[in-house]
Length: 390
Length: 174
View (cartoon, rainbow over the protein chains, first blue to last red):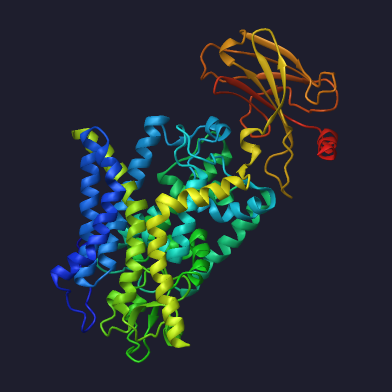
């Protein structure tokens, strides 16, 4: 746990910002968070109000600390791990209340009551383009029996992706928070080197699931490979096929989300399996924000490469002065660099232009999105837990 | 040129914040509306597709749905015909009906099933083909998207596989 709040080495010349300036820069986030949680503050009952106030204070405080300390990664990680821990709790809670189990009843498939997950998006594109149909047993718009509908999730994903690119994986993906939390537990990695060629694997998985889904018109990744079925919902085990699926989900979850992140301190599922992450990498080309390496300051000490949780930096990319397209803009490399050589950057501007301005310009939409999406998920889960005591 | 690209870079960066701010109030409805207007819908393999005919019976009705014809090259669900007996709460303890699927005035299948009082009880149907439209297994109980009987939202859904000829006829009609 100590690792979760550990202090990264600050780059030279990057001292703390004055408190009043930090408060002033945090004010827009405070107003945004109040707007986002105002509905919860107005509904009757103590639990929604308490949960909303806790999350509001949490999100605003973390942003203040990001501004005040000029560090990003450790504060973002506190939010992200909280999201990763609380999302499954709230989700499973809802499933148990609605259905009494985590299994997807066959009736829910027929009635379109299966909650839509963003991980299915890459698989739905080709069939949707060809036939205007979504190959997922959800509902197009939210209904009382299925509030997690397809269109709202696609719109949220679309906006976040245009703005953040692969930053979705560092600010929005509730699954990534689980392995980031596990990776933060040990002080040092037991397995110190991972073959960097593994980072090509998600592209292979992406190509395979997109082609198979287009060929069969079924979400193959969800049916066979998604490790997070183990902590959300899965088909009832009533045949050899469903038993095999449950076995694959559990094995992948234990291996890639629990064991390997603990041993390597990497987000291994994101790095070597997740097709959605590979898909998001494509949108890094679209996003105006990126991480660059100032070659004039870089001493090739490799600290940034060791800090990257997704193997998105290597000697070649460092020599070119940029992170690879799989970079999820979590800020670990920027915070780890003691020379101030790894910087936040806005495309089109000079590398020597104020990296702190670029960081803040990235953090406002990223944190705004995190508060709107992740913050409301945390608040919803917290509300259920508060209900137990209030 | 460098100044122009820098200006554009900062402008787009600032616009991303603006885009995030207006997402819940404007973009959500705007993009959502555009998506809905494209006519996008869930693959009828799951929900069964639109209804095309209602066959009234004594105290209940049978809704015949548009036959499902997969478009995928390696479909995971084979062509099927769906019927729905509704309301399930008004069905007699035993149902036996001849159903005309294609509207040609001749029944295509005979379906018989018991309706237990417990809505959660597992259903089993005896289905017999009356012609060459469907090729059902003798007893339908399996929970497979292409062959099933299930009680859902006060309806009893029955899906039976279409014959190759019937699927081809249906394709020709569309």
